[in-house]
Length: 469
Image (cartoon, rainbow, N blue to C red; front, side, top):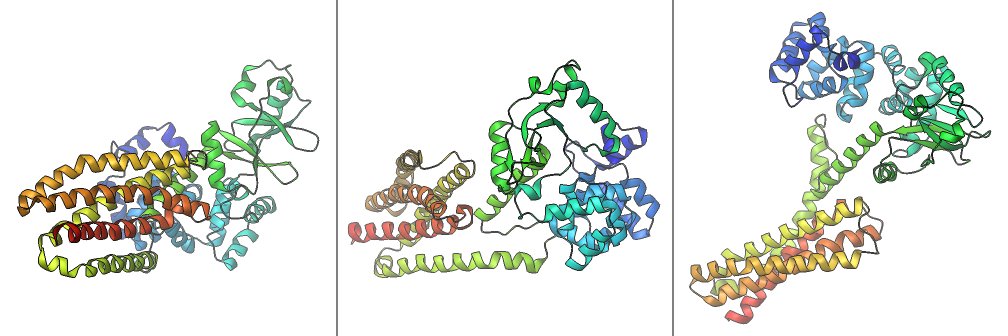
């Protein structure tokens, strides 16, 4: 099995791993070229030899470097077990493409190798008619687990959880539990860290870490070993679940239904993926970019970016209209046209800094109504300090360049004021959007840029008109 091969490599897998990965665990161009050559030659056995000892995450990474034609050939020669473990690791766009090329019987066989949460994530990407054929080809128990997971809302704990879980009744001892675990054989969950102690109604009342269970004498009752647990409800949002894991340093947590019954578990490997996914989404949204990956097509990328560029175009027109108000001033003092972009650019960068810090604090729940005022004043003081440090530099430079100390004074004052504006909108915009139940990562950047441009031009040209004319 590929995971074991990487964990305990033999001579052949050592050679493959050495060829495939560099010291940063990145696939080497030479290895990718070997795969491409084998695919071009239609040499399936060579492909299988190159891929079978790779970790599924590395196979998924390889798929991102290949063209659609080469991916089609590689997919045909992946062993079913490796294919199964690779599918959850693929970027969404690439996974959809790969799934189209896998026969439904092969896919049904591969999905049986996965935990229910990973299998549900793969099945979710299938077209309705193909999903029905794949599920119909699976054993009833596996099919029921996947259908149950798909019945929960997307991005909820119910969709995220795996139904495979180890539980023991309150009256069992350590010995009873160990014997039960050993008797499960192949039915054991692939990954679990805790045994959940349940009451007669199958409601969790505590948990015992496997490491603690193995150290304890057989006669000790589980109730003497169990610790309090953090329960997750099936309808909790995955972002909230990730926050609970991060805050309480959890490795796993039981998932309960509306009646409090144990229905599954969530493990830390799933949470790492969620945290990375949420961070990735926030970073992209701050830039006005949709959720793109290596498998996204050009039309998809264009559709995701054009709306935000259109909004930016409208805000740019708003900034330009301010300049038109001061046309007479610019005609008389040409130097202002050269200097005014400096004020708006510095303001935009400062606003983005405040915005990024605020959005992150909201996402990690470090910022709420209890400390919002303190955060606002802190950013305002930071903006003032930055302005007082930078404004003399640009003021002196502008005065020397233009030969007029008044121009230096105007741009210095405008920079300080616009940095205060930037700090204000950088904090208040995401706070306001969050209060209104909008995602602050999606809309804030446009408002901040528009505001700093508008007020940057207005303050600079307004002061210049008052002082110089």
